[in-house]
Image 1 (cartoon, each protein chain N blue to C red):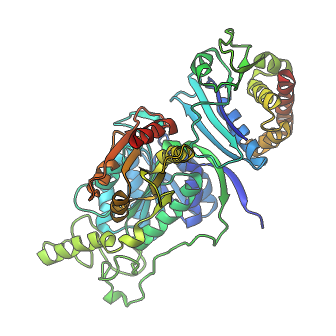
Image 2 (cartoon, each protein chain N blue to C red; image 1 turned 120 degrees about the horizontal axis):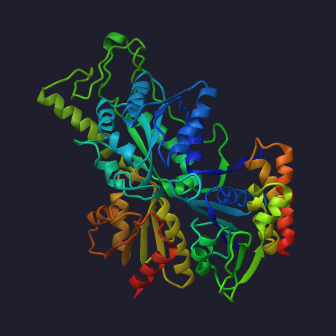
Image 3 (spheres, helix red, strand yellow; image 1 turned 30 degrees about the vertical axis):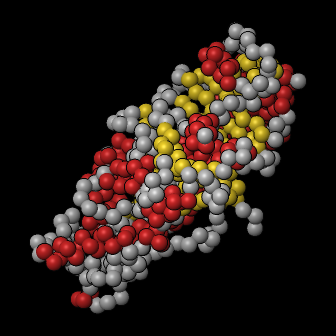
Length: 178
Length: 378
């Protein structure tokens, strides 16, 4: 099993932390993992993306140039990463913020209204968790259970009710992608 | 007891490695992409009885660690290109006064302010020659999170033993990436602390013959009298203009490295035995090179990897030997080409040496290196 993933969006959408969670979840399932961020000097508003590799083999390079899966959280990310997805790969598109449709016909595409689903749960801050849930639901590469456990490892000081809210978002995302 | 498994960043592993090695003083000024090293030590050091000081700039940062080390602390600073440039003068002071300390440079793209959040490997010659005058250099270069930890520990050990600043040359890619790390248990890795003098203080010479590598030396304020200066000095540390003493001091500095090359040289090899095309690569670039070697082998091309973890001193003899046996050597670097000149210097067999370079702030890819391997195979 080898999954190279790119998660991309605006700074502040939580694409960097979503990637860390995914890598941590893979680690909890005894996979080889790597995580690598790419962002500008801005704290918010710039573009940010990260590479995650989850594999049964040792990971050589952490930068995923031809991803099996791309999670697109905003419009500019679609143009940037659409051409890179491997044929037969997967693209998860946050259709709350991305109006365009993909022109690729050789990949699987799942449109998920991440922001709307997150808002219904109480806050758009967890739109990234909806997207991660969708990834888990669509690929089965990591389980919702492992991502949930990763939440408590990565966000050690988070209150239980916040963790619970994030887990809800993961589950909603998985449902939306199935 | 099962091992602790962490999803650490290179910078985090470096900070934790420093704690493991017994670092008890950090002075510095935070700068991207090295900030996590300082941030984490600011939290860990005080809890362990150590000291963390954020200084007004990098010049003061290295000044404090030299002072702390002279007084017996195990000290470290971390920085990136712009800060590393500012440290050059006092780096030479540390070499001249023979003060053990660790300087971490998490390389970013330059020159000048360059690209703060993007990586490069273009400080490798500055690491060797950035401070003026003939001087010894030891620099280690990790390619993984686990190596970031282990080589930080090793950097402290070498600093203590060789009485000099040791540079850990990270890059943004390894500094910021995360991967699995099994944390070594206490006692699992060797920790070297230099011996303290036992002689009568009246007899003590701070720079006595035999004390330059592995010998005893005293901390300031421990009852032994000596002088510390950047001026060329005698065995007590006092400035000298005597030609024989100048020669003695300069030979002493050179011999630290030249007489211990076998001990200092360290390289990792993959598939070198029958390799026709060898990739010389280090740090982040070696990760992509490793993948390119695997892909080449899958295509039936006999490729191999030569990866030094100690960059300075340069592994001259090994590179010369490998060049004799292989058909072509590719040098994959994230710069406009620096160590490629060192490889060429070691080439005694007119083997073609081909640079494979990237310098736009992004990591060199396995595809780029694989293409170069295929070209070389033709």
